[in-house]
Image (cartoon, rainbow, N blue to C red):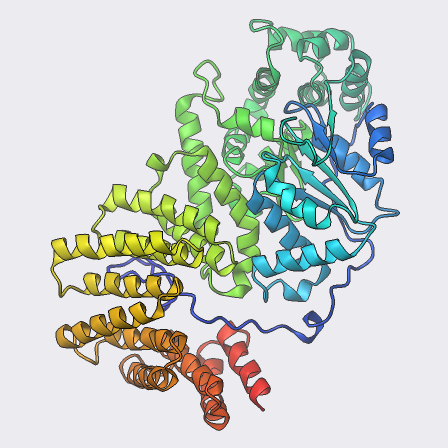
Length: 631
């Protein structure tokens, strides 16, 4: 594994020989005073992408949306204008609805993230305080208790992904969804199937876009729109090209060619993209490269941190936006239509802009961008907003790429993302992330490599936390067995696996079994490594938590006190491991009713945390709030 990546403590997962595992422990969430009261939605809360500046037609469909009180699902093929219609209609509702909120809904995780973003917009002071699960629940509670709001659920892939949201909140406000499928909506919402534009509307759209900056020759626009199947996305791209380059529709047809006929939606967009990129090859040579990289991320709000850093990128983005292939936002992020992305990342040996080698290079560039943009600490709430912005693009990359192509740096990214998902209360998504990382680690390093063992241990813990305890215990037992065969009984990595097995039992509710297992491994660690070894001391801190689960408070305090005191000697009082052990011990004293001792310990900890971590670090805040609560 590449060097330079270190574990930050017992609750971290990182590269190195003795990789740790996800161990969430007892997390303390400190709410600011404004977060303790009911949620209040500020007036004029709107988040809708301003799409389709040259919107035409769709009068009957808009009227249906106006008059239908129930959920409406706008269905149709890609590029037909479902999202444009929904955005146009939603922006007209802002005068009498609040909030008006847009959620990308390609998966249940996307829906949860969008709801969490809504809660954070209502109460920005909670962005770096509450995990995503708590923010999502806060938004759902508000929606279910208030009227007059509007949610747009864009590009729903599976209707079941939004059933829970609609069941809890759908009867109070309005919901409009878009989807490519008409199946599965019975009993959920009314389906509005959106066709391609009528011929006259397609020509009007072409004319508006092409003449936006001044008069242009539009002779032959009818034939060009017909060739493009009157698909709004393809028509708009072609019109932007003609307007930008003063190319007449008949000349564009000559460049476009009729070799494949109108074809399907994807083919129509592919042909328009090729013509545009051909022309941009001289004026914006990076345009094709940038578009191919963008194809591997989620479609909405791709952060500036993921954009290529090569010279000429900004100019390329400007040209792509001018040709209606992307949308630029004020915060530097970029949105791309899903159909444009599909074409941009799909290899075509006949298209010089989509040769297989170029597509492979773009995938690697996208992967490298994700690795670079990774926040330094997935456990620190200060980075959670960044994680929320990156996660849809990590998940999109995983959907579009094959796991056999994952490299070592991406595996580290996936493990860190799994830790964030665990802390956000999304265990199922965390398990999926760890499974992908584990497959890569086994392929690149081997199943018995220490790093692979650490990733597997992280997945085992999340499995147990997600209610799959039997599976977690079985997997942990198999890991212990196989590693013992390879390394023998007294190797550090075997001790780590045995500790993971004990933790799986604890998280599954088998606390007595966990105690027996962990006491056994501590005895062997003392015998082999010595009582003062760092890992032995960490095991004492772990068994303190297990004793606490078993209601053996005195044993928990004794083990925790020993581990904390010795870690302070071995690692120093400023070390994160030491501070976590001491905070856990002080909390134990408080839970046991020994308030004065808990106060004294927290008072001693405060200056150390301030010096070592700073006043805004979550552990420092935890100490401050614990003192306030105990006083």
